[in-house]
Image (cartoon, rainbow, N blue to C red; front, top):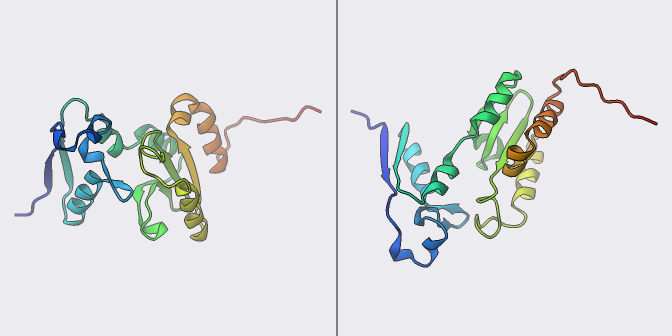
Length: 177
């Protein structure tokens, strides 16, 4: 019998990790540059686990947010005829791309306001630049969409994406002289 589901209890209060756990759940405390829970889930997936379930409690929204896919962003791309793959590491030699269109050689990095920062996410100040350079070296155009842009300026971001993917929106722009 093959084990296909992992149940991970993450409901504890993290009192042994105080004062760090006043700010973030202990599972989200970074090891090098990724939260502890990332390594647990990655190891489970590499061992053949197909579904991961978290048992959480209040105050653990950061765990859900970390693993949450941007279905609305994916849906927008798919509805506009763009083939997408989710969370790939292969195109960038082990560096993850959140959404990737192999046909267009375009990757989209969805940067959450929380975990893509130097202070909280422990990301190096050159993290995004370095990832973009790796993508460029692999003939991939990497687009960064920040969470606040997607949430607050969605129409603008959608139009930019359509332009980047060369999809005719029917909108004509004219310069006035």
